[in-house]
Length: 85
Image (cartoon, rainbow, N blue to C red; front, side, top):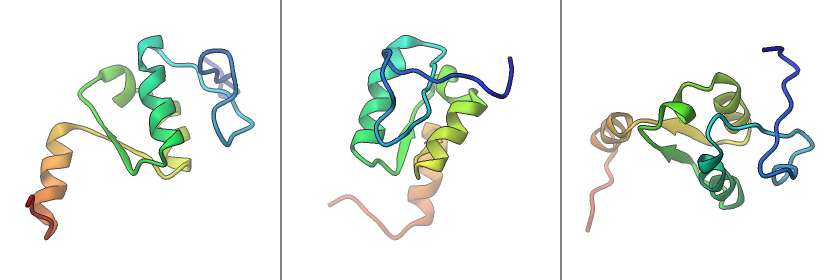
């Protein structure tokens, strides 16, 4: 696949971007759109289509959104001072 990959989420431009995103799994579209629209810090998932797509991860990272595994989240919570109330 070329580095000039076209990106498209449901056939329309991603929020706040002139580029378009193509997802491996169309069912992940709503997750990515919600994360972008909600200015999420991260998407926590075990979904390999999200985790292993370097272009998508880079695209999300450019928007301040990390794609992390459940174990990554647990590690982050263990390192932080945040505790559930």
